[in-house]
Amino acid sequence: MSKRILLVLFAFLLFDSRRADAYGGISFQKLENGVSVVFIDTVKSNSLLVVLCVSSGSADELDKEGVANLLTYIFMEKLQANANADTLQHGSEINSYTEHDQSLYYFYGNLESLESFLKNLGTVFTKFSFSENDLRNNKRKIEEKLLMDNQIDKILVKKESRKSVYWHSRYGADISGNLDSLKNISERDILNFKNKNYTNNRATLIIAGDIKKDEAAAMIIKYFGKGEQKSVIDRLQEPPHHRSTTKIMKSSQQVGVPIVEFYWKIPNYRTEKMKALSVEIFVNYLEETLKKILVDEQKVAALISYYYSFWNYDSGVFSITATLRNSNCIEESINAILSEIKYIAFEGITKEQADDSVKRIVSSSKKSMFFQKAIFNEKTLDIIEWISRRIGSGNEFDFIKGYPDFVKKYDLEDVNVQAKAIFKNDPCVISVIKPVEIKNAG
Image (cartoon, rainbow, N blue to C red):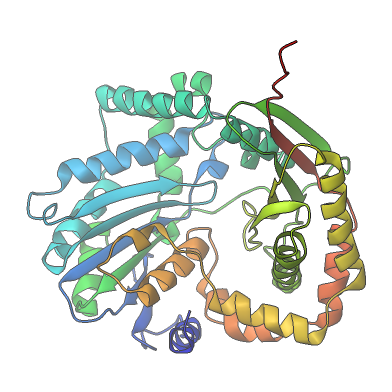
């Protein structure tokens, strides 16, 4: 991300959530009906992007797995069915996805479709209904996906690993549920889940386009209702964890070289954000260092990838995926990677290394699903992705707006203390998927 884009992002993060003052073309409003709105000004064009972030996902399910995901399928189908012909033209698109902590619905189109889509969105959100046929057809779609996933060894190993990491909670379950649980989900299950979790205070709209904000806000109040509907996000807090390492080994004809994944469970730092920051700074440094040692210097791994984010319970895990060069030294490679990580954690990082990590944390962002569309520039898409990941997971703007200053206030000693406390231990899960050995005939 360029320095100019970084400055725009900094400006956005410093906005005052109590007012609608705009910084760098981005502003926030908390409407009288409880819905939050983030307006992102784009270059003058006829393009429009609307994202509804609902802080509700499979972690909010009580007993039956897959209810949140099935609701998302039906909800999106209703949006598509209710959209008029003018809304869905010229490459427009309505789509959605669900995670453990959030459900997102988004619309690509043109500015003239703003009121039409907000009316559609508000109508489905406030007056959601569906038929037995809708339920049956969408169950069939998810069943087909589950059957397909069950044929892919990498997906099966990841699911098993996740269940071992989150052995104690709904966060270990598959978002789509399973074939048995899906059959038992009733119409009443879907409606109860929707009514409990899809409330105005858990809804945030991100609107990107050259629009009139006051008019858009009035539309949202009109179509989402004037009265505020509230519900409480009540998710599991961090329980005690087992200390032993679960090892998962699978031979597969679907891979050519071994793939090893390591998972460290990170304690729930949702209410201890300075600790979360300390872990994130160290992990960012670890990422850069391991890539150099293990990949650039051609030791052990041919490819290293990472996943980490500590701002909500769902993502409270750090994972490393290492693609090895061959099957000859799997155990040696695992031991070498773990030894390197423990050594780095034991030695700690310097102030200069921590400062470099802070720069990378602020300036980098993953390419989002919105990136496949050319109608919005990189700056807009990165900001939308950054916002949606946090607000969709239930984080408040009082944290988001202060993130740049928050990053700068890290304590180096705490960074090293937190890193050592976590990474001196073996990971909670190590999974290996390796090629099937072919024995020579005779």
